[in-house]
Image (cartoon, rainbow, N blue to C red; front, side, top):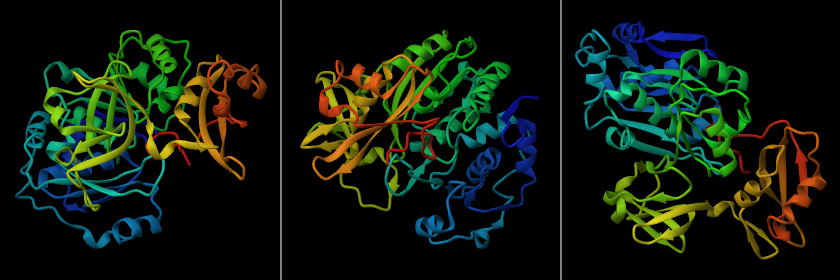
Length: 411
């Protein structure tokens, strides 16, 4: 029997046959879904599609006050209702289920909450078309085995889920596991595809083993650096590595084999650059509670590489630039410079207020060599970046804090 989901953290081993039987026997539905169990989240999404009901995904670690602020409720028991069995004819097999899921009602929608590196979550609604814009269904993809390395209630995780679901694939949870278990799961399950943030990849690198089963590595959500790219090439020698740009508001928009993105012809009229900031047309976005003009400012600062065709690379988020004595410092530039030093596993650059300069640059470093010291880092950086960009405070830590989606926490 074909595997649907393996989740060792929740002790789940679910086949497609079990999933179908479980859906056939489900009698109640609640549009609000809050669970740390990946299977519960995935089953909820599938059921919502079959019965044409909205689904609202809540992070499992949302506090009561967060839920009240975001939805107006803290207890969702009153929203439980019986499943209309007339909408769900008895499903017989995987092929029949996928066929039904591939043609949902135009009224169906999924509600997510943003969770970037800073700021308060906000609600975003998507329909089936926008949430599956870049899903590729083909016979070739039917044999894929997905390493699931995202939070299942956020955009990136949902997009990976639909890619796997609509191709009838197996999903192996990797998110939240320790490095040893991640590599064991890749090897034992013959994982072919992994999509994750650069932070996730840096947490499992370096590695002395190689994994030949992996055919495709996708990175998104943060800027990808050359060091991580080279290390992934060594660990996954047969994998094609793709860098993607996506957001909760718009889903996946661009993909690249390096850090330079090009705009597909059908999207050229829907992309606008103003003051080196990326704007996207409102037609590409899901709906939000905040009124959006015709053009939505993503807050991403870009560097144009060529105008025709339009190619660019991402520099940073505008809100994350640090003002040091009147100079603008890009924390990603400083992080990339530090990461080129042998013995550095991961780094986070941030600011601390200062009465003279306004802010000073600080950093947290995860090192895998006892040869790395504050002095060695500063000496190394003197030939890499300008003096005002070199961190004044350097702390060595065991690990870096991450957001609910696995990105570095910036504040």
